[in-house]
Length: 98
Image (cartoon, rainbow, N blue to C red; front, side, top):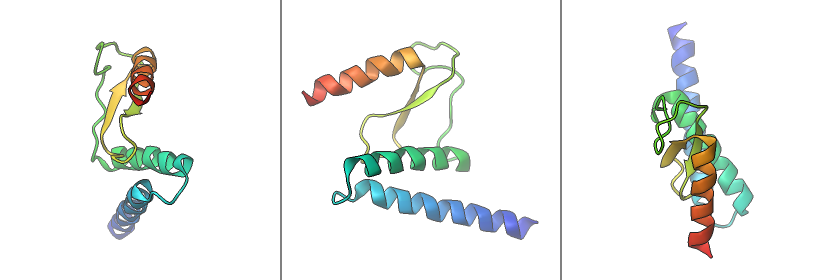
């Protein structure tokens, strides 16, 4: 059983590496890079590389948290926010781009 568990973890780490490479590949379309960044963050969280807090990072409310990527080229750099704060953060990103 331990060998199977170890192999599964090794496979997940390999998959995380592939998604990290896709995030940095500028030739691929943006939607594929962003999807890979989201998936890489979810894999990193399941592997224990990213720790999910119990409450929103900004307002400290205990709600269902969402991952917010400030930059999709850094898929493991995420902020955990409640839905209200996530909407505000998305507006901040849109205004920064414009």
